[in-house]
Length: 252
Image (cartoon, rainbow, N blue to C red; front, side, top):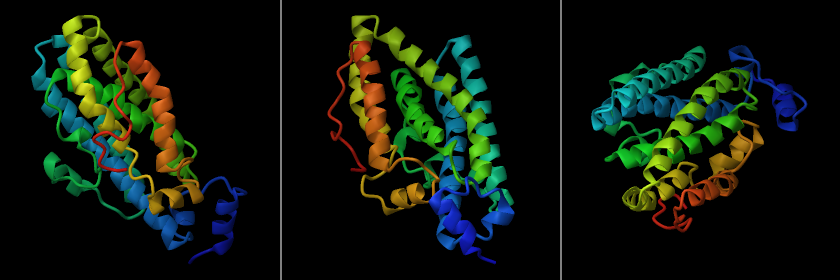
């Protein structure tokens, strides 16, 4: 049974949280669709991240330390998948099919960042830029109006923070040599637009609806702009030239 009073209070901000599945069931269809879509995308992305660390990155390196890191990060990403899957399961949505779907055939998390990483330099940017973009969205979701999402995010963020920092160290160490700096600059031409596209299209109606229902704080374009302002100086401090913000983009 729908309850317009709860919906109105959520919209007005006088009710901070939709507490769980019981209150969720009383919310409008638009809220249902947005929460389920957001969590399906997030959950698939985390699962694909586990596959990246274990299937793509692990074979790329002969370093025992880096192989150990890949195993640890893969386990963390799988745990993030499990947390998202639990929220969806409580709402009647089974995500087990994602595990049986090959990485290249998954289509909810619409970014090539999780599907095509060809070199160790790109592996560094995967975390330094790609996971950093996800990290910023997760920070917004810590204030989600759906309490199970808000409760999930802090522990995920703490682990993702380590992922981003490790990627930055890989790129920082590369940039200490002339050859490494050139390799990183070349890879950045691809990975800067990939990271910016992670936020989605600028004119997304769904993005506005997420903000309206307090499932996110910022529109896609505002979140992307904030990411640029935060991240471009970090790249420049390593001696890298940041590409144009619309160059090679897919989701303008």
